[in-house]
Length: 623
Image (cartoon, rainbow, N blue to C red; front, top):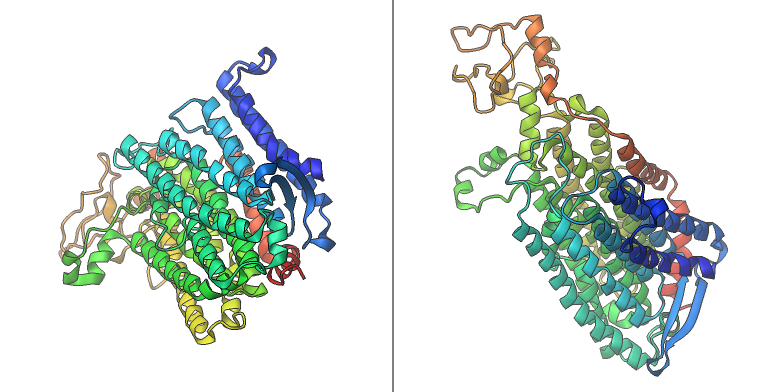
């Protein structure tokens, strides 16, 4: 077990070095670029196998104890040790990190994002994996900080070099949709500056705890439970550490780097950023702040809960604004619409990024309750968010590859113009997108439900000494956030997967049933049908060679009955509008996430039974 954990942490680093070296003649194959991508799949696959073996060998009867430990003196003068170990809190995060990185490497083998050398891409991906795995495995405060910072440089280059340049073979990308080089670099700089500034403050808090506590050993400090630290020291330490971790969480209002980073990042960068890197912040709060400075955590918990709830509502409202059609915004606001600033581009990746602010708000709320129920819910929501949001970013990358854009208005408008939405053009892809959406909104029976529900249960009965009326208010506001989340995700599914109503209320696809149950013969306005209201013909979205409608306008301007041939032609996508459904490599990369989302939803005890003993141990000061 010791060797397994050490190999899991070290192997990606060795693989990164090997990726930069020339491949041996026998392993080059006919394509050296594919050889190095195959190397990335091999190394991340081996790390995943070792992680599964570690999980199999884990003693689940002692989930609260550190297992597979390695404790070697590294810098004696500073009492810094190479201390590794896992318990019921870190093991699920370790396995999920290995899984998501392997799926990203597998996806990149078939769809390598253009923009740079595959050797550099694979090396950076492996360094990123090493840093995230080490963050969840180290048990020394200084090593935790080094591992925490280790992920910044590779993610910066993934965004700045490979960002916004998805392979759009078979699609026609728009110039406005592909971020310019300056936009990618700006997003990358915002990411690294926010996290670096937060990390500097966090380092001061870590040093304060280590120097005042007499050791940097995380196990010893957690067992002391803040006994050697005064109340003021604990408050200052938790505030400093919390600011650094809140940037990565991301907590409102320190989240503003996230939408730009997600929008500019390549697909695999977005998957790892949402699925793994965001979890480092909340993991640090549970592993460091709660057990090592409990009095400081108790003092600042209500403020953390308040920021978390604001993040839930802010993220949900931002997503709702992006999800609504542009025309609806003006209709709903009326004359006041002219006084409001222009709505930002309705990018689907940006919407999912803002949804992460809301979902991670539930994680922070669960931690802020300081109860086993709330903290267990936070840890469960961490895993659920990694699986579901990772799947959603994979799906959005597939949409961009096929359509050349992730703009919601363009995706929905394309469905109306072609006469068929995603369900009709790529039913499996549409079904997976709908699955990811309903999982993200917390449908019972899927993984997204349990974490958010337990976090709110924790807010209903917070820890002793916390204001119950305040937390009941937080609970009510978080419940409102769940309704807003369902609203914007269902709007996205309706617009992208089902299509939008055309002008006058006609459905996007011809041949849809009328209110009385009879088949409708109305021709979609997008293909040049006369408008029922004005008798004029809409041509804004009419393709150069529109299909014949075989209709004759009546005296009122309404279209006459269409011939069966015309209805059949309009009721199915034109040949040039056909897109590829789910491909084999996509199915291989997405199936594990779908399966685990269902299993975690149907059998939550498998994960909660692992985390609960460790949470009880941490909150009880080692007792």
